[in-house]
Length: 579
Image (cartoon, rainbow, N blue to C red):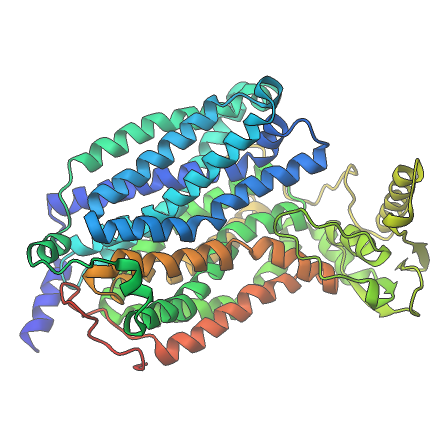
């Protein structure tokens, strides 16, 4: 056995020093806080829409609220460029200290911001500006925290050390859910909608103060100090990282061979699972959030387990295995979720034949990530209504120019063209069509809104998980989180090891935030469009499956295994052609 291998084994077995614990605590505490801030808005989007866009009808205000939320995702890659460049120029510590201040102050101000009724149009303008500041800060925070921890980690333990950062997104989501549930229970629903929603935002100031104080005590990373002392800093990190193919190729490899697949598995296991429970299976918000919270509590330890394991067997085997297992298991897992959470709905999907008979030229692919597109044809209206009711339907061709019909069992219902309705008909015809379709679905066995469904899962409290139905759902959701930990636990170390110190912050941040902000962030909208297009409530799962398998193939062929790389070295030590 070589001296290097013996040294690595001894390094992995020794306990963390006090200084190493402080480094991880400083980075993780701040990043948990950043994710807490970011998720608060997503969880409270409907209430915020009512406060800041009250001049518009309910449907329109919800669209604007989602647009403001989407703005935070869309600007994340730009934050990665801005703060990544600063991190490589002035240092890791001060840059990600800056990001937490921007994020924290923006979040606190949201809690104080007057609504539309008080200051008019200035309220939504300021809200969107604050959301964009939060997104920019988050784009710089993750790269800074990961690089800072990795450059403090001893050789052979980078996967273990950086895996603590990977827990922060999950813990931030969990913390935001717990605070919202607690405040909602304390204030009551009416008071929470009126003013209680501000409390979680205002409480963030205490988290900000603690996080800043901890980070102020820390020193700059040793790798950056060594590079600075030797005078090897990059004078133009953006141009060097993305303008030179020898470096830019690693960003491309990172995006398509690692991050895209990791992003869709992560968003499926945490965000789409919650979306699926609430919007497809129609589980109430409290129950869905508690089920997800328990799965996060039980599964989060996997980040550290797989991060540590990657120090022994490599990053690639674990990340790629997580992608493959996810791709192979999503269909049976989500069908089992459906059968367990809402048996009545699942049975109706299997046994009730519903057909949309339409001129396919009138049918659009209803991809609507911002909520601003309008679908007015009779085909689109019929499909959207059935998709919202989680109906399993097929599509049959009709003669060109003919009106769309919905066939439920032996009953046939003609849809309408919204653009042809005027006056009172614009209100009465859509309402009548919706009622007729819903009545027919209810008669055919589908559980409909407002009608009692004793089989659907419903929790009365946070600890109400020891029944067969809830326990089974938590087990399945926890397995989905474990898949998340497989792909996400080692990803930070894998990205850090792809880039030299002089452009590391810049180089790794952009592919990470494009992959997670765009590939992952667009998943719910894409999945719904795919469901509406085909009539299959599970068809949207092909989006993460195809991307995960594509990343698996690309990663297997071109991503290097760098777990033993000396990241203090100026250039990467592995070629991307190695598998």
